[in-house]
Amino acid sequence: MDTEITKKINAGTLIFQEGEPGDCAYIIQSGEIELSMLVHGRHSAFATLKKGELFGEMALIDNSFRTATATARTDVELLVISRDYIAKKIELSDPTVRMLLQVVLERYRDIHARLHEVSSSLKEHEKDSANSTISSFFKQYLSLSSKLASAITKRQSSGGTSDKINEDLDLTSKSVTRENNIKNALQNDEFELYYQPIVNIAQGTVAGCEALIRWNSPTLGFIPPDQFISLAEKTGLIIPLGKWITDQACLAAQEFRKHRDIYMSINLSALQFESESFIQDIDNAVKNAGLSNDCIKLEITESILMSNPELAEISLNKLKAAGFSIAIDDFGTGYSSFSYLHRFPIDTLKIDQSFVNAMFSNERSMEIVRTVSLLAKNLDMKIIAEGIEDKNESLQLDEFGCDFGQGYLYSRPVRYDEFIELLKYDSLPVAC
Image 1 (spheres, rainbow, N blue to C red):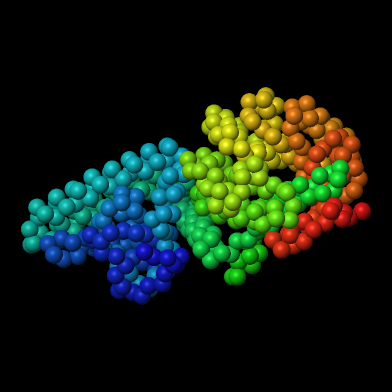
Image 2: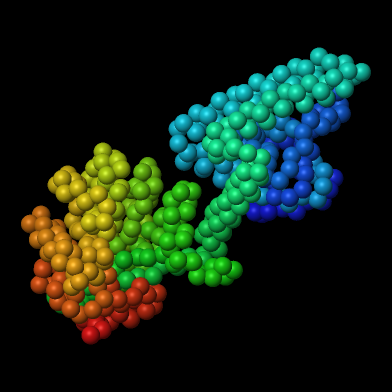
């Protein structure tokens, strides 16, 4: 199987052969590709593909063998699209898109079957007719693909089409490259967890910490989480990445608790939440680290609750029954439907830093923080205020009855060894 993102191939080189199993597709970045079929023991060319065109995809979608032979007519550069990449894109696509793809695939199968019927019935001296018929049928397939592409991308003119092909090629190349980089980063241990203390506001002691992923690539440098987490979610890579985070965070928690009785807070994404195995994965990670489930607080966003309330209710009740603690992250920035607070087994509300930072400049923000703090207390929930940056904010939050705080006033997210040093303080020194 190809593991390269791009391949440079010399003119005349065979790329793949009819009848071989297919493990990847290609997009032409430069040069020309010739497609041919075996007719009476001879390869008959029926199409020439150029920059921006995709080929080799049907064997992947259909999980079957190559239906044609591909040869480089000129020196070419190809973008390699793996089977896993296409399978994941299909899996995550809209049901209507999957239906359209199925229709195209069935049309293709029909055209391919007729091609073989025609080539089998024609005699050797009729090979010119065979080539003509093959080309005719293949043009039908190209026309079908073109119409589908037109419906999706709204390509209108020849000039616009060229621009759109270049744009699509560029976007696809970047997407494939970034996804491949994330996969390689997981395999090469390029990710690292940082830990930000969660502090008892009244006492200044460390009560817990939040595990936050960081990526320091040896080739790309430091990549902020907001530049790869969303891509990991879109591509489904958040599942293995989330499992890695959970495993590492639980192992770290076991070591941290040798110094102080604290909990570990772990973020869950929507895709993880919908995974059938995620509850078992979390439970296994805790057990493998020698922890009990009540040492772990799982953070979810309001959007997870609102996007699929039925699933959320079932899953959260299972997690709660297993002894995990549940927190709502960035409370107040999403849907904020208070009617859901009584439905789900939530232990903690995390007030978003945008409200905390604006308390002294915006009366409404001040009132929101005060009201949410009071609401949480009345519902027997804990409150964590995020993004605390100065002593005045801490004092005001303490007055409102906020239980815990998190922010640069106490500490930035730090590496494993640095966090162990923080645990040695009876109370964290704060910036005044």
